[in-house]
Length: 175
Image (cartoon, rainbow, N blue to C red):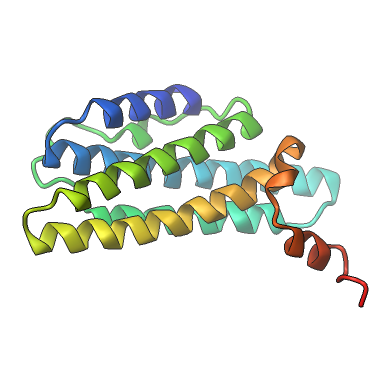
C-alpha cells in the first residue's frame, strides 16, 4: 500500500481514538509507520545518491529518523492486546513521492506528539504520565529529524532551516 494512504489512515485513526488504550495504540502505529517509511526513504535516497554521485547526508538523516521513530515506538509500547493483525507499517509497499510523503510524515509526527501531550495532561496515574512524557520527548526528536530530512528532500521547505544552520552549512558566517 502507498505510504501516503497509510499515513492518512494513521492520522485518521489518531484523531478518532477516544480511550487511553486507543491513543496509545494509534501513537504506536504512527511511530512504527514513520520508522518503516524512513527506512524505505533511506533505500531510495541511497539509490539516488549512487546514480547522481551525491553525498549520503540525506540517507543518514532518513536512517536517523527511522532510529528515532523506533525509539519513540518503544517508548509508547506496542499495545498488549493488539489483535488487529499486522501493523499498518507492515503493509507499506510503495513510496510514490518522497517529498510529499516526508511532508505528510512531519504532520503525522506532530499530531502524534499532540495526542500524547493531551493524554499526559489527563493522566490519572503517574506511570501513564511518565510513559507519555518519555514518548513525547522521543517523538520530538523524531520530529526534528523529519524536519531536517524535509529540508533536504523538498526545496520548498528550505526556509524551515534556522538562520544559524544555514550559515554553518555554507561554511560559516562572516565575522
